[in-house]
Length: 111
Image 1: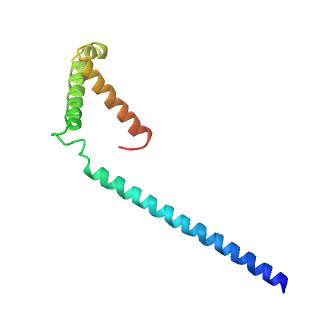
Image 2: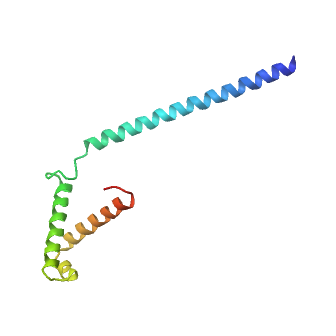
Image 3: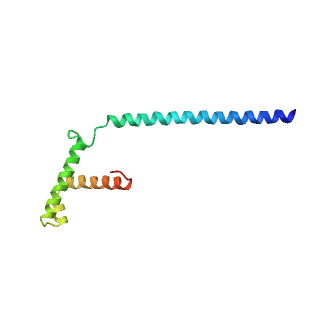
């Protein structure tokens, strides 16, 4: 009878620990869902990069305009280095930032 009691006690302990782990996993999953929902809500409140009335949208428009201007200069026969010299420091910083973002998108497989 003693062996049976020991086995039952061990089984109950295993079941108790398994239940605790399942409960902990459920709580963790619920926390993850809450964090995900908060991130989604935060993302929805952010303005779109392409929105023309935002600072980021203005920067994007400026970068596209600068790139077109550089392309025109290069296609007209000016070297790329000479075309780059015509840019202000702010313009250069915007282009560098845009190139960095594009490189990160390529690196992580985003369009």
